[in-house]
Length: 617
Picture 1 (tube, helix red, strand yellow):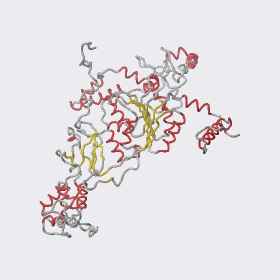
Picture 2 (cartoon, one colour):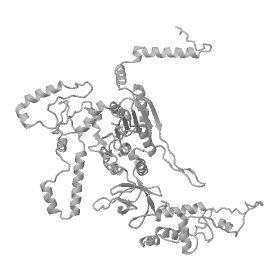
Picture 3 (spheres, one colour):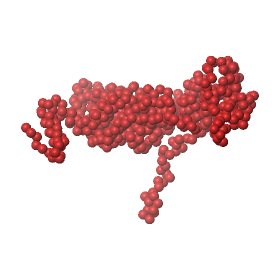
Picture 4 (tube, helix red, strand yellow):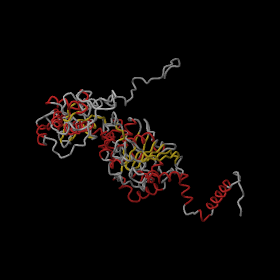
């Protein structure tokens, strides 16, 4: 501890560094081997790519226009680098280049090939013939005697252009021959522009659109973009929005903001957005805290999306996957409570509750022979008497009581790191793998396999996080983005959320959230309830042509937020008290309604001055 005379703040000694501040945990400014990136094209396409040194025997890293390209040359390039799609490779361009090539380069190439595209050697890059002649002093149009207005030239129009498919003298087979011969894309675009007989009569804006459209086709470029939560969400929203429940990046930002997720939080997530929400939470928390994510299949299917986030070890290890049956199952309120020992044995609190997901461990053979059927029946009756001894749905277990054996945990506790090689493995390396490179690859795969086994949690450990740790310290945030009924889903997950903590429910439709809103408001389960619609519109910002985009998404989903009140007791008590009773039968509801109507009538009566009058009988 610091001395009393010292005024400087206390600093941790250098012997206790932050384990998550190593270079392996910090995001790299350049592309590393094995990283996933997103390629942004000028026409709005978003393609996923993995930068690997070699991809033999695996899926191609990236496929553009039905052709596979290697990505080994992208390793080491900084994010934001512009690439040009060549014949057999992605060529990095120098700094300052854009994904849309400069159209002036095309016109310069046309002039070098034998004259400008518009037929005037002195005209600008996109100047119509009449305006170019006026600028050169060859023609003079105008009227009215104005000095500045007399030199103004009328702009060209497209009234005489007829689409007969005969204006282009360069055929498709000629373009393919140029491409196969290794001609650069800019040269091909210049040949196409120079071979167009109607290019001279087009307006400046039409000329620009024509050149840009040809550049997108014959000179494609893309930019390397880091895979983050907004970039991944935007890419998937453009590719297949139905698979992520029409979740837009602005709606994802609101989910992260309203859930109040930060480093050190404990979050419970149930989502069907291909893992985008779970990965965004893990990336936001930075490896500090815990995320319990529920899945519905036999195993989670979001591994591909989580790999695209390029999470480090700490961020990946903070995500704990748990089956949704532990929350929504019929016996979810009476789960098996494991208690791990040094030998990997776990004790269940109730013997009559059988877990269907985890493998049931038979009793040892020695005890089976000694005890027989009577002993097992007696043990079952003793355990039945201890059911729900805590009174809150959990079940305690005495030390030494026979229970379920967690075989996966037992195998993990027997492992040592670094794991020594077995004799048969060592013999295989010496006799069957003579190459040093192949040995290194084999040992690297073996190391990764054992590392995953040492860090992978078991099903019983997941139950302990949900019903053991969360009973002492419930989760700080609750995020639901699923295609199931939001009302039933949220009510099942609310007991795991601490009081005064936020919850966020996302849905692509407003009707289920409106029903959930009314149910929460009727039961008094939450306050500060808000049902919002995420709306966003993109604008085109160009000189003289700034306007909203003509096509846009109608909605990015609806979000219900709120703060949980202290427990579901008032809601459950109200439901139980109201079950089987009718206000009409007791008369209490009609009596209160009549008193309120009479009070309002007395206040609204002319000359009453808001005074309360006795009702007439």
